[in-house]
Image 1: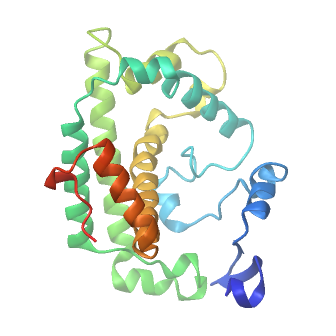
Image 2: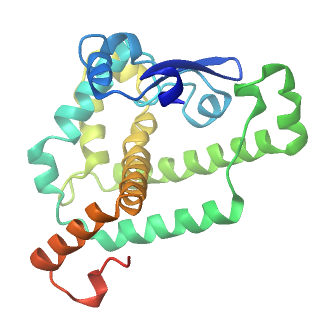
Length: 237
């Protein structure tokens, strides 16, 4: 489509118009000079139920609220010092979590909501049971995050502080309106986003390598040199 219509063109996804950009110079323009125009995401029924009514960092509209939680995440949670303090967290826990999440995803399949693309067909979401599934998933997610918060409140100031400990401390010490409007659960998107973006990036990287065998060979050779030729690490061509 880019070859036919050019590096930028509009397509309609249901009721939403989407701008497709295939030129890095144009992308740079969008993400630098005009970044504020393209910050917001369209609202969806799924995020309304699962994202605390669009108040999660990754889905909140640009404004004072978004800037406040972004500052909290950047300064208190994702700083070099904080990441250094938490680098000892066992990666086995992350691997276990991702494996379980993947198995559940394969078992349950993806969800498509008519309400978000063709609103007048929204009644089909009720018929298919997708709305019930989303609400149930939101309850389960809320319960998990809530149990994390309760566990951290009970063991305050015992041992090293992780992300949730830091958030609890900041919320308790803050006198700004952020304390009143920011449930800690809404920052859970930092955990979910960290998983999803990595998966998407790796998927695209692997697909591009498979479609460019000469680059794949260079990558394999580089891994053999820097990592070794252990069968465990080999890239199958």
